[in-house]
Image (cartoon, rainbow over the protein chains, first blue to last red):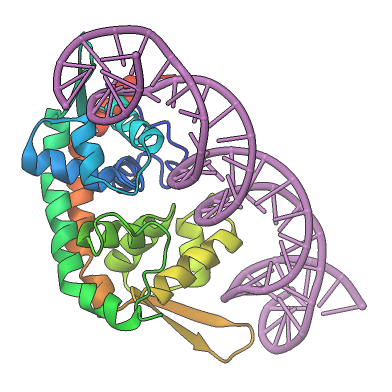
Length: 119
Length: 119
DNA sequence: ACCCATAGTATCAAAAAGGATACCGCATTG
DNA sequence: CAATGCGGTATCCTTTTTGATACTATGGGT
């Protein structure tokens, strides 16, 4: 199910670390994944509301890539008005520890960012 | 010491997860960090040899960003021929758990990548 | 005298990512 | 009847990132 044809994937061939970052590296992907992880299934517009500052085009692209990479599941209900639900696949759920590790590190060091990020 | 003025940093303002990925998101940064973590101090050319496929210009940029972000330390020896050593700062060492989490996840799922990545 | 290694830089070009804006059909709501 | 929400698409543009290539100074080895 997963495609890793993103360009950013030719370090040490088959390097699992780069493989992983290449999947979560999009500008909004982590935020999306985080919300899906903590809130479960969400509709497109729900995600949009949680990810202010992202246009719907951008959001769509990020979600489609996540889907193509096998991290999220996209369920389309053939209704009008349309309804599309996004949720994490099993593989996507597995990202939990990574996101937690990222958050922990960020929390510990974000004061340094703010301190030197005054400009 | 750390600057987070990278563009990719305006999700939920101050989101620690995005802050972290924005620092390790460069194409070669994880590989560099990984080598510095497992091998300790390395010279520029040492890194270059471990990161085949990256031009020296690209390598320089990645390293300088890592330095500006406070993750690696750059020690210049005023010699000829030049000698420059790179090592992880304390903050950089703290990335260990993240890299391990990424690698673990990648290892568990990389077979899926290969399976569907035949093209 | 010649060549190589070191740690880059400079310039140009290409590609990839992301954003702005406008638009769609259709049903519900007012 | 008009406006709104839904889940996008289409088109264009700008920014960001990465790569290719050539070049630098110097000192040591042969």
